[in-house]
Amino acid sequence: MTAKTKMLGLLAGLLLVPSALAWEVGEFKNGMSRAEVEQALNTWNFDKSLPVGNDGLFVYDLPNSPGGRRFLFTFCNDKLVAFDQEIEPAFRHFVIVASNYSNLYGNPLKVIPHTSVIASGEKNLLAMFWRQGADYIGIKYVLYPASEQLSMTWQINNNCWQAPR
Image 1 (cartoon, rainbow, N blue to C red):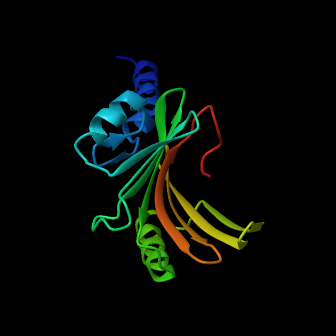
Image 2 (spheres, rainbow, N blue to C red):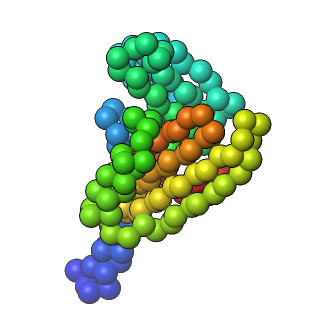
């Protein structure tokens, strides 16, 4: 085998690596079809499942449920490209997760601070994203006038929108 052939083989192998690094959270992984996600969700016993437009699926437990789970699946051309998992909202939790991610992945690739006005008042968002191979791993904290929301997110580049967002 010539050096040129070895080099081409190495380059071809490196091109395949990003797909092998695609995110996987529990039994949900990048590239699953919507039907595969819905089938996997059957064993999770969520209280509610709501389509979000043509490209999203929001599943959650009712407020009185002890689990309090809330997942948002985002699809592009019927393939799973993003997964958001809400966690107990508190700025302290945001700092802990962001610190853990920084220790694992280094400085954030992208930080999104955003303030806007909604019908009930001011909305403030702080999101941070890290890159791991082809994946974007992030945390989003949103402060609303009467509540707050904290979610961890896993995204991958796709043809429908620019990641991370």
